[in-house]
Length: 398
Image 1 (cartoon, rainbow, N blue to C red):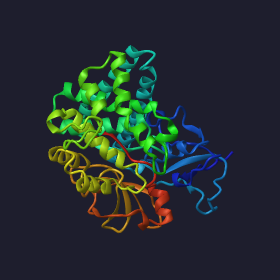
Image 2 (cartoon, one colour):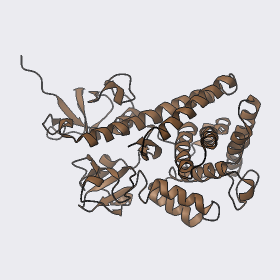
Image 3 (cartoon, rainbow, N blue to C red):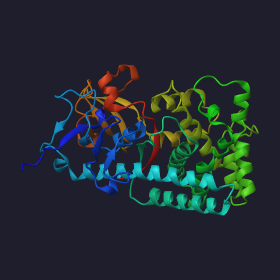
Image 4 (cartoon, rainbow, N blue to C red):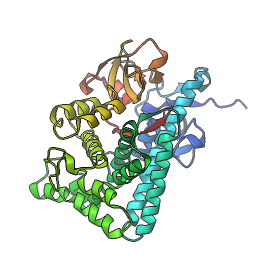
């Protein structure tokens, strides 16, 4: 009996109601099994962030796919022809994604134990921080990668992990000692725990908040600090980060209106990164480069110039998640930073969204030509580059 030919479905055509198999080792993705019956948008988003261009279609028919475009038949141009460097880089990106999801799950568990089992919460948080430190210092080069949780909005745990990773990268670049980075990481992971006392309907409200709603949300630093203080498991420096992560060096922040000399370096770093990461989830921002420019123009007096420069050094001119046009006229989204800022690792496609592929610009003559706006993308390019998938950061070993 002839062997049935595999049907390779582009990840841009994933839909609920079909069953697919991932062309990856079970160690290289966050799912329990390689075979997945797709039942949610979150599953689709997670698969599309794994760095693969296709999945193997097992059953079901994507409604929008024509017989000509529904599936790409197996060809010789597969992973076998990837360079060893590309295979390794893809593996590292998948590791970053898995580690990001794992850390979110871990801190979510710790959040749930703060009141009922504070010792357990402290222990689990400490394990997560030590693991993140090992990941940060565990390779010769560690860059910043674009990752996603698959969530449509920034949750306190997802936001906390992204803020922790970027804050730790900045602290490492400033050569802060490890004990200080350990404190910073703990405070960053827990900084929004007080939002658990704010009703979800207020936290996730899309439109303008009423004054009472604004006041309610503005209380979350005090709520979080008091919750951790009552647990008796976290030191004063961690509590300071949680209480003052919305303070600015010019005294215009809250809840206490502190100024630079009253704020520790760890609290200032988390305040800066919290400010930047929060901008990424504003509907009008979309681009992480636009958010960085907004920070320069409107927040220059509120954050230390030295720390802003350190943030720019970690993010690069084209932070992960930035939409760009390349010198060969193809379009791309920055995935991993590089020392050569015009040659990051990107996910690229043609203007119509076709030929989606992972590229190492450091290995090419091509480079970033310019930054793109969302309205410059065709519908096909939007499906391939997925600019609305959410932007979070995590370490990527190189």
